[in-house]
Length: 359
Image (cartoon, rainbow, N blue to C red):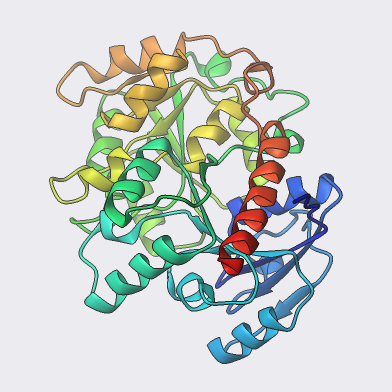
């Protein structure tokens, strides 16, 4: 059976950067990509980011979504999780549904029985599954008994268009001090993995500058900045602008608040920010987690931060690690480099779906 993918519908409550990047690559491959969202238009989330969708629809009711999909002419649907309800409901659709699991919720923390059931249905009964890392895929295959269905891994790679064409002068060349950067949300909730204020204050105590860019405005961010002259809240930026601006720093921080409860989840993740740092040509300081350890064994782009050791020396050593400006291209670590493999996987998913439907 020969299959050619002509049109794909993405469905997500609030479209995120990963969804936009995957849709961009499929669009470049000549596939029509449309979007169905439930809450927030992607232009509101990513100002200044060129959207890859031919058509964008908004629906709120699950019944309407099911009817829309079943009556459509799309070759397949890519449903992005968290929550898992859309993938779960569409598992019985007349269309092949790919469950793109950005984040396995049961690994992150305690979830309700209803959420656990939806996660099981979405992972078990979707036509095919995509996971962000090999570790999450391995956990899912064992936990949900995934066999006789297409399953693959697609990391949070950047697009080639996000790679800076030029770099800004380093701030450290002006003042002789070390400047780190952190991209992402922060919180002072004691149980949250983004509660890294103690780490930032410890670095500031060592006279290491930390500049942080956040996805939205918050009084907490400005309050944190007031705790040390070495902490700098730089506000928000659209994705491509942010990567270019981060070229002025020395080290990217992929540090997390790790607890006994969240460690299994964090061990299996690889966040967008790490790819953005590499796109900006920055070496990275990582928390001591399995996925980060494995990545550093393959690519010597940083080091694990030992919070019990001498922080300044670790940051200084990391800042001296050279990152080739062409690193991501050289190692085929952009989303475009995954294009052929992704299209082949989608074709396999469609073939598998219709084969099973005849059995």
